[in-house]
Amino acid sequence: MSSSKRDPYEVLGVQRNANQDEIKKAYRKLARVNHPDANPGDEGAEKRFKEVSESYSVLSDPDQRAAYDRLGWGGLGHTAGGTGGDPFGGAGVGDIFGSIFSDLFGGGRSSRTHRPVRGRDLRITLPITFEEAAAGIEKEIEIKKNITCNVCNGSGAAAGTAPRRCSTCGGSGRERVQQRTPFGMMVNETTCRQCRGAGVIIDSPCNQCRGSGMVKRPRKVKVSIPAGIDGGYTLRVSGEGEPGPRGAPPGDLLVNITLKEHKYFQREDNELILEKKINIAQAVLGDTIFVPTLVKGQKAKVGIKAGTQNGAIYRLKGKGFPNLQGFGKGDMHIIMRVVTPTKLSSREKEMFTEMKELWKNKKGKKKSKSS
Ligand SMILES: [Zn+2]
Ligand SMILES: [Zn+2]
Image (cartoon, rainbow, N blue to C red):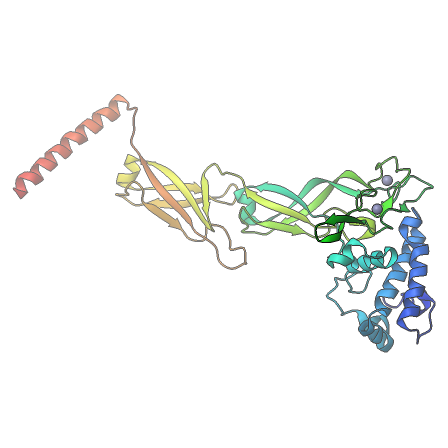
């Protein structure tokens, strides 16, 4: 990337020893001519505009300019934690657009707050199953989101027209209102009523997007859900939010994870809770049973000990949820529920009656022994 980039002095058409005023003047002229709003649909202009902006962002910053003078574009690669492929070589794109706006139109919104201009974040809720949470999964989901209108390229203006600067606020989007108060005249700044803060007015809006510059379209997004995730977590898919205004970077997609109810299981942190019904004979005599696990179709063997009480808890180590940080696993806790039978066959009734008599005598014997 760095080798094909043009020299910023050459882009701005200034001498290598140009001072800040000369650089700023050259930049303003070129930015105005090539601004996307003045050239709707012209990709060449957009490219030149970005090149001009980038060159200016380097030459207007004494540190970056010095680094460029020493090492060329390669000297700027590590300046500001930019991600790979960032066309602005590490400097925040939003900041650059912010400064362009304030430079072009005199005090834009972004320069006031110093917040980088960026698209809005989108937020969705994604319910997942216990099994998906345990194993981790990549899900493709469809969201409806605004994308830059392809007819007007986001300018909002109909073909052959361009937005014009708002004459009321001069493009700043802010309006000064004088008010007489007991303390004298006060000047209040509010959002411009003419352009509603946009700074530009669109006389003939684009047919497709009605002037907003954006259209809603369904879009498939892949979300990687890490193993061990629980309901209440929010995953961030960067760059999948709404597009930024006038070419600024998009916002993020925030995915709120919720856990669907499970037919058998409950969850406490990474521990898995299962209530298992057993009959009275299993409780008395013991048995081998199989219980469901978080792996679909896979069962785990549990040996019920003779004399198991109602409410006894058996533990299967490592059969719970994996730790989200990647080490260790929770356990499965099986709460034994001994079910008292209510409908008995005549044979069963006979046997329980026999047992009842037996236990009565046993009790009577014990009593006579102790007394
Ligand atoms: Zn449009
Ligand atoms: Zn205005």
